[in-house]
Image (cartoon, rainbow, N blue to C red; front, side, top):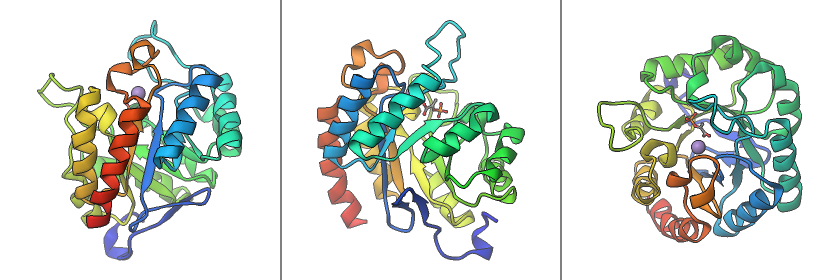
Length: 263
Ligand code: PEP
Ligand code: MN
């Protein structure tokens, strides 16, 4: 179903009115984790003013250590929803367990499946039951074929609204958090008709890498970006080191527009 051979045109995925794919760009911005209402509201207003069209924020967080901040859970989801009502940006947040699928279907505009769950096949099959579009991140060490097959699981179970998100893969290099695979853009566009979004924040793990990688992604034909933005990165509960301050995000968005228009 994801195969370009049987579907020559680029797919356009509709995220509560925001079109993604075939020249329509998704600019997903927001904090790694939802911390407080005021935090998310401040970031959302700034991100929207800079041109973001979707708001991200983790409520359920897949942390490596069980002793790290695990996210606010349902309370975090409520905060995101309230901010959405106030600011008017559709929301993107990660689902880790099918237990919460009903409430995500009700409240979340774009359901994110994180790298660590890319091959949670039971969860992927459950996603066929909802109408909401899915943002499927690439697994930590997934090949294109494995990643596409995971999209196929969702599509074959009844939900063809899938957006792929490259977020860096694990290589021998440890200076950066992961290695951003920009070749994924032309490869996935050759093999599939699905929109491809790049997440330079989780790829590099360092805020100063985001600017150049975001520009390279847009120049390479990405259908959008997911960028972590935080109003106080030094004190962020998660991923502060890779988060842009709103001013830096604003500058980047202005420069990206020129590149996007040239592509
Ligand atoms: C995230 O986007 O919050 C996240 C946890 O990303 P990934 O699944 O790519 O690590
Ligand atoms: Mn993060």
